[in-house]
Image 1 (cartoon, each protein chain N blue to C red):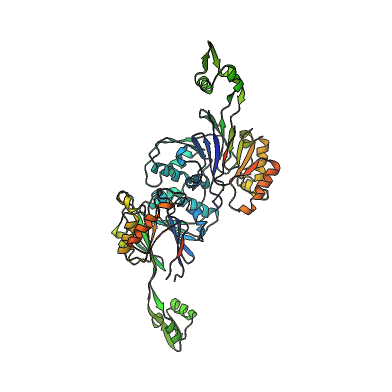
Image 2: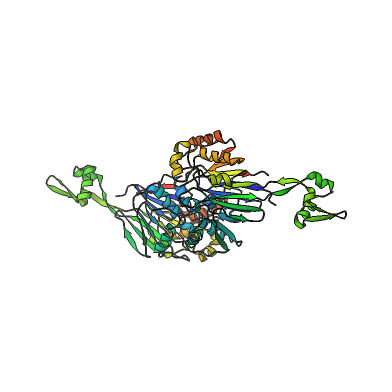
Length: 304
Length: 304
């Protein structure tokens, strides 16, 4: 069972970096494991300014192969080698991932010190990682871009009252979760005896790059956090849509349709300086109140 | 003729980045042209915090293909594309450069908008770029690393007194430099008539990675600035030398033997935090007084 879930933005820019924003990369910490979504150039150094260690990354998910979303991958991996990583690293991405990533990892002179697996995911595919499930869908972008949903599995909700009724402590509950039951006064007590409902697992969705897409409405249904790209403000959205990008206003509309709880805007065009960024957040908030414009190095806990 | 020469450090770390230091990259501005030496990951963004525009880079010199020295190249070039560069970019490096760089530039989906040439330089080779000459020598490192010297050509020194003697203004001098002479009172006045000696061209040497090497003493003879790698302090130099690196003390000895005017220490190991860096500078200064430990984003004019 997952306890702590944290979202950390290593880079919230898009296309090319600016002094304020590095290139796209978002970390999702699930207790001691870190999933990394996109690895823009400079991600390994950005991580050093946050609470997340690059050595804790277990899985990397690439949305697509535009340079701003993956050119930090080889540097990150070579730094893991220099720091003597031994644990396997799993990399997931769209079609062409095996070729693109293998070629990237073949650059320069070094030897891998740990195993790496690369798996190409198809749109609509779902992978069960035990405590959580990752699903991917193809978005609207000139090259194949996968949006990812990370969904903690639903669990029986344990009732304190029912625990007391059977005189169980938390260690007993652990036993029930592990074994399926506990013997108490000649009775077998199961999870159903001490549960009073369902604890709905937290869902987080990261779009990568996309024009407004029904696919995100479906993927992000009831998500706790929708991390949606928001390249421009509404005055530029027509052009942005042509290039497979969204405005903050459109991201908000998607969040609303999906009944998401919170919207985090990222992939902000380098054309915006801090002074003229307010418009992106304001335009979104008019449509979807729980909107935050992400900043580099922002960390947020995702409550149960 | 070159007027302004400026050295800018975009990254002064080595192996992997630290919060204080990005990966190796040094810019040398020669008037409106910028030569870039090494392109560690994140260089394009580091440039944005300095006076140097990435669009002004005319030539890139790679010392070797360890990831920390070149993995920022593709991102930089793709950003130049997005900013609609049209001018040719020349890239120089050691053996294997054509394969390494071509493979790197083939990653991801984009189309080049400007021509790129890649030339492999041999140790001992010299290239004449008109106003300046670049020479390269192979250093002591586990993979082929080229150190580069950038030498402004020597020029006749123009004497103000002799200009007055012939009643010449600065425009007349320009004519002499261009045409070889100027006609004045039925006489042909040449550069020799108004010169009282030689203006020695400025020389800057950048080592890339190396254990202490006589090759650098020779290359950096009378250099205005020797930019020498300085991975560790003297307590770790034996191990560093094994891996093809130098201590600050050893860099200072090289600078002294070369009769360089100034020593700039760079490629500092990420093991050092700002508090324990003094020892590197102090150990070098004991041997070579004009030593500066470089910092990221440091800019310095090179006087004539």
